[in-house]
Amino acid sequence: MQRLISEKIRKGKDRHRAEVSKQTGFPSAATHYYEPPIDLNNELVYNQDSTFFVRVEGSNWSKFNIWDKDVLIIDRSIELKPDRMALIVKDGEFDIVQFSGESTQPEFLLWGVVTYVIHAVI
Amino acid sequence: MIAMVDCNSFYASCEQVFRPDLWGKPVVVLSNNDGCVIAANKEAKSLAHIPMFEPVFKIKDILVKNNVTFFSSNYTLYGEMSQRVMNILKTFSPMVEVYSIDEAFVELTGLNNINLSEYGQTIKEQIFKYTGLPVGVGIAPTKVLAKLANRIAKKEEIHQHVYVIDSEEKKRVALKKVKINDVWGIGRQHAQRLQERRVFTAFDFAYNVPLAWVRKEMTVVGERLWRELRGQSCIEFTTIPKSKKGIGTAKSFGKRLEDLDMIEEVCAYYISEVSEVMRAQGSCASYVQVFIHTNYHSKIDKRYSESCTVTLPIPTNNTFVLISEARKALHKIYKPGFRYKKVGVNLSGIIPQEYVQANLFEQPSKISNPVLMKVLDGINNKYGKATVASAITGTRKHEWELIKKHRSPYYTTQWQELLKISSKS
Image 1 (cartoon, one colour):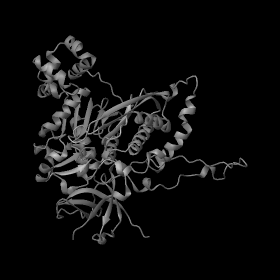
Image 2 (cartoon, chains in turn yellow, orange):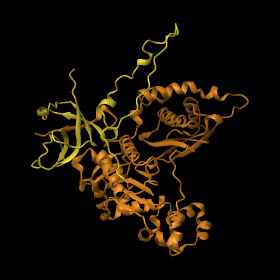
Image 3 (cartoon, helix red, strand yellow):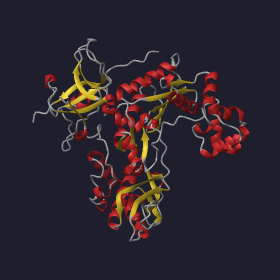
Image 4 (cartoon, chains in turn orange, green):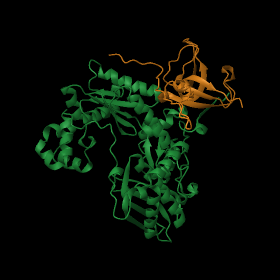
């Protein structure tokens, strides 16, 4: 028996109900159109159990558009494919690389794949 | 078949996930108040002369000399990492029994036509990939055998941390490998008595001791163990947590306290903690016990310890009622002139809140005020622990709190304490 492993685990969504006007008792015109507001945890985190947030210090990774104080969302369950960015460990230290897919790349230990970069602009 | 999955040197491993500079190096974790070593990884254990449960001040030199990194315990981190592991396990089977912070039984019955050894490897690899935590997996027909298989998986390197007992022959081999005092559920006293009867291994116990003797000398608990070792499953899966019979907390102060005021604050704080747990499981306590003591080991300080138990007029889980009762108890036992090390509280005589009986003079709902408690818990759940609290808990927590000098960041629960990465160049 083969166990299916999908990359994204979908979560159940909250049910939202429209409030009824207390004074008139009339239901809102939007009653059947209500949706829960956007929850970034649902959108940016594919798999909560393998996701970690990491803070960047310094601008050494500016070539990847990653700047000082940015927060990286790292998902350890995602496969490292060419062009994906990854948090890796080399000689006991963290580094960020863009994976080329070629075997000529120096050896490293994969810590997790970068899925999003959160950059504050204020 | 049942799998027993446990994390290898869990506390140390949690620390190492976020510290690649410590991979392959000795790491130990200290108890509350940085008192003694409570966990060590493989590398630290191989140094052999690091005694567990030894006071830190006695062995600090050894730790420093051997470049052992030590951490204060960070239960917030360990608890969160544990949750991840358990969640991942739940994707492998609908029946997962969390046995402790770093161990769980996984029911695999019904998964036919799979290679159990490969399945165990998949579990191990996936947990490592997702969390960075190394685990061992033991698979066998019963819980006790699974625990035994797990032990072998850990001890013998060729199995790559996964060991399956799936035949009579393998079971016998496994039973012969494990000493009687290492069998799960056999305490030191029973082990000693069995050794006197020339029972040295799990095999001797299961096949050379008659059931009648076990039943007579070791009660039904021993009989279950005996049967489980022979391959007959009789310890059930419990996936619903049992309600607690008693709940308490006692932690040493960060420094010695003499002042009644300050001890009152700590006592009230602990009561708030335990009564919250009480409400979360929907029960009420009939008795409150408070105890205080000075440092037993001190040669300079005068020693004193005392406890007092109060019977509540009506069982309750109301924080404020419990605080005022505990305070009365504390006043009874407190004596000035001592340097106290610890205060502790215990709630016992626990009954479901629906069964609380009124007495002639008082209404349970009036005393327990469930509406107020619900609001209190609601606010604290949303805005964080002790956002709203009884005023007697005070604002001097930093003065009495445990010392955690070497705590690692709350990497996974606090936005301000995230793992930081920087590059040297």
